[in-house]
Every structure is written in structure tokens, then in C-alpha cells.
Picture 1 (cartoon, rainbow, N blue to C red):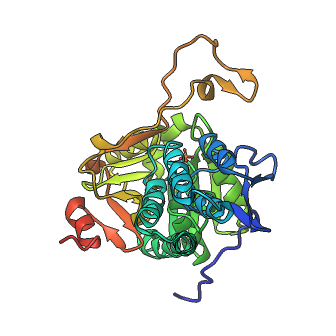
Picture 2: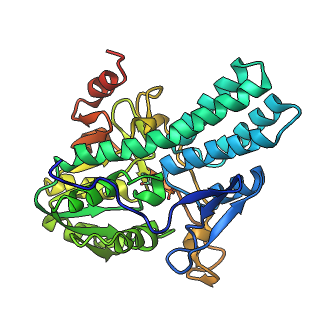
Picture 3: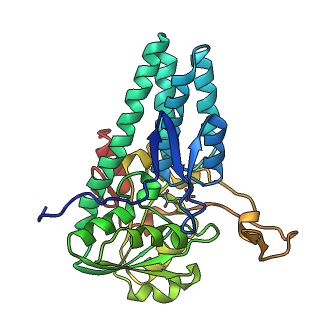
Amino acid sequence: MGGVKETIKFPYPAFYFKNNSLFLLDQTKLPQEINYLEIKDLSDLIKVIKELKVRGAPLIGVVAGYGVYLLSQKIEENLKETLLSAIFQLKNTRPTAKNLFYVLDSLEEIIKKEKDPQKIKEKIKKKVFYFHKKEIDNCLKIAKYGDRLIPKKAKILTICNTGHLATGGLGTALGIIFYSAKKGKKITCYICETRPLFQGARLTTFEILNSSLKNIKPILITDNMVGSIMKDMDLVLVGADRVALNGDTANKIGTKTLAICAKYYKKPFYVACPTSTIDRNIKSGKEIKIEERDKEEIIKIKDYYLAPKEIECYNPAFDITENKLITAIITEKGIIYPPFKKGLLKIFDII
Ligand code: MRU
């Protein structure tokens, strides 16, 4: 790998364990405050996921898994019922990101199949730690594949946050950028601020500036600048929350605008995600449930109202980028080019 040191130390981990408790970095406070929240019970975890204090498709899956594991350690009676109810509630927090369901479905299967409570606890522990390690490994594999698509000197446009704070590992789209920069490529990374919750402005800028990688120059833009800067970009690189079998991709609202502009200016548009984000049970993006969030996120910043309180709003958290707008999907199993269905079925060993 040309002497590349493959890991980047993140000075502020997305989460950590202490005395068998889970502590999560409150992402809503970044970049102003570094504040870790102790997750004491299931209701704490549900609240932080719903409020996006922890977010990003792979990270939500891992953290929800750890939540079920910690809960299992505390329960003496009605283990199966309590855990299945917890899983049901966790699944109701955020409907779009596949990774949450990927982890929870697998834990649900263990609980339903296994009779012995002690074995349930052991199997859950093993599975959750495995999922976490796998997401970290997958990020690095995605980065290595993605690096093949990055020129020595590149202007890259991205949206939202797809780094350590969204995965617990190196990241997906941002992981590729980190990896290529570490390898010596010179990257100017244009970051959409990502209205309404500013994950680009608050989190991606924070991560890049704290990575101490000299080869990445982050430039923050407002979302409405995309059309005017696209002609100067070399490529667009984004993450994903759920990918359908035909390649249609749900990602942060605004992603589709980037894809349409990229197509117009003939720029490559790449999606980076682990296979845990791919939903092989759905044929197209039409079947993806898009999370709609509270209008307060649009009309208010902290306590300041930007718009009249009574105004009606529409606040979908994600949009669907149609497969025909996507140049390639970068996964830990390789780079998939259109027709995506064939490529995706192949990596799942279905054909
Ligand atoms: O609402 P969020 O902040 O959870 O949305 C996150 C995104 O849309 C990311 O792009 C996606 O989860 C990919 S993260 C590797």
C-alpha cells in the first residue's frame, strides 16, 4: 500500500465504554462543545438516536446493537420479551437507514431461535462486537477501493457527514478522502453545509480539521452553491443510508441535487457504503421509506426563529438518487458499476 499508515486516530471518538456504560459524543453540540452522554437505559438511547445526537447509518446500527447488548446484561427476568420489545422500539427511531435494521434483525433472530437466556446474552455480545469490528474493517476496505477512483490532485464535492462520526470507523465517502490524502493525494474537499441540521458545516469540517491531515483542504459552501461550482469539481463522493437492488440510493436530503448537477456537467458521481447499507429485499428506491422530521428543524436555529412559527414546512431527511445518476457504488467488496442489480446480486453471491 505504498507505506500508507492505514489508521487515523480520531481525537474525539464517536463513543466509548467505561465501567460497562456506553458514552456517546453528543453530535448536536459539535463543534462548539465536546460532550459525552452516558446512556443509562433504553429510553436514553432511543432519545439520542431520534434527536440525532448520534447519527449516520452505520453508527446508528452499531450503537443500537451495543444498547441491546448492555440491556441484555442487566436483565434477569423476561429476557426474551424485554429484548424483543427494546428492538421493536429501536427500529421505530429512524426508518430510512438500513444498517439499524441490519443489526437489529440479526439480534432478533438470535433471541427468537435461542432458548437458553445465558446463551442469548453470550450470542448477542459476540454478534454486536463482531458487527462493530466489521464496520471498522469495511471502512478501510471501502477506502482502499475508493482511492482507485481519486486522481492525484482532486476537487471533491461531498454532503453531510460520512466520516468517523457516522460510522465509528474511518468513514465511507469521507473515509476515502482521508485515506487518499494520507497516501499523499492533494484533495480540496468542498463540503455542503447540509441544511437543515448542518452535518456538513458542523461535523465534516470538524473531523477534517481535527484529522491533522495536511493534504486535505476543506472548503465549506452553502447548499445552494452546488450548481455554480460543479463545473470545477473532479468528482462527487457521497454516503448512503439505504441502497435498493437496482442501485437507487437514499442519502441525506440534497444528495439528488448534487447527482443531477454532476450528470449535467458530466462529472463522476460516486456512492460509498458498506454492504450492510444495501437492502436486497427492495427492488427500487420507490420502496424506501423516507423519514420526515419536525418542522422546527427548518424554521429555527437554536432558540432563534428564522421563519414565522405558523408556516407549513416539508422536512424529509433524505432523498432518493436514481441509479441512472450514479457512476459507481463503492463497497467493501469492490466497486460496482451499472447495471447495479447484476453487480449487487453478484457481491451477495445470489448469482
Ligand atoms: O440524518 P443523518 O445525519 O443520520 O444522515 C446521515 C447521512 O445521510 C449519511 O450520508 C449516511 O448515513 C452515510 S454515513 C456513512
